[in-house]
Image 1: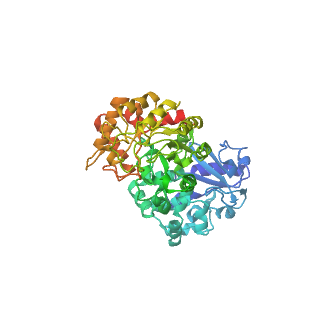
Image 2: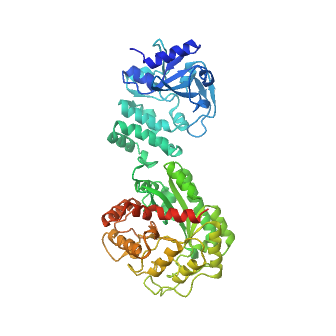
Image 3: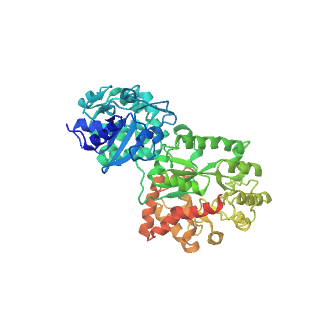
Length: 551
């Protein structure tokens, strides 16, 4: 077979300067298989600094012994022969030592079919029987499979990709280790996994999805991330993090209204996770809060490739640029600070950027409209227009303004709502409340309150709780639209956001989980809402408030 012209010409240049050049990796593999060579991967005993003397190379990855250049219209990657130290981050070795022998370099390569070297005379160097594996259509790992996959879990996806594209069988021992170590994909940069998925999908979308699913890859990371026309939904409130199932099954995949897998499918930009506690059930709600912070942080660490906690507006923007979802930590019931502003500052130090001042109990901060302490109380009773913020509650409002925490008035009494309007110098939110004119429960906001929120530059998140929407026993999405229409008519489009209350409410009719946010968008389109208006409801209005309030 005739060697590629690009290789022979470059090899001649290297030889003139006293160095050897070898085809390796995909180039050797495709050459021996008789396939079209699309990627030119070469190896040399010349170091990057030595190559600089006779080649025009880029400085990218030079420290790892890899250089890139354009040679006669082709993109070429050249790697200096090397041995590697231990891997430090599931991707890169701690150290690289350049060597002159290809046998030493071959040991650090992943699969036998990628460790075949061919010199400028066409001589094949094959130390791990890669040619035999090509002939037998096999994918085998060099070295102990479990160790090699733990060094770099991306090798899991590369093995699946080679198997699919070449129609090769993966050896049973390697398949076993791939399935046993699939969880390590969580350790990788998600964008790297997506790159592998895209390479596979370009060959066959259907076959790619089939092979990824039979190996349960989507039990650990999402298989797709929609870039174009992404919904970018932001939800201001859910109770998911305090559900026991999260402690049992984790946040990525579960049977709750919200999981990270479902959030990705629903095309979310950000989910607010509220730490919700019935404060009367605990001797110290503050200490209990700390336990759930640990759970939240643990889930963020375990799923850091696809989601990260945000503290500032720029964090959200950075996550989106890196194709990550964002997680905002909030608190539902300010009674967790136990009447102590120092504890409020501690919440802030843990990344809490929004706090619902009350739940359905009075606390040191103020009073709710609906109190579980009152046996006569009901969601349909007259609102509390007498008891609002306490003197300490006013201090809390001012301190939250100072710190850069969003004041959330959902659950607060009508009097407390207007106290917040009076004392807050920043926009406030009703994170999960609807229109009382459309559905007359006291957890919803009156038209007067909606107008006041408009003047305050605040927002309100549409709540999917069935009893806060309507008394309908069928799909309630049309009734959700009625709330949105009315709020828009009264306060304008800039006041509306989303606040599902998922995992804190009965399963909504028509909105069974967070993936159904896409159905809500479709309903808004049918209702005649412009894309600009939908964007405001789904994410832009919240981003405006977050950017203004949070430091």
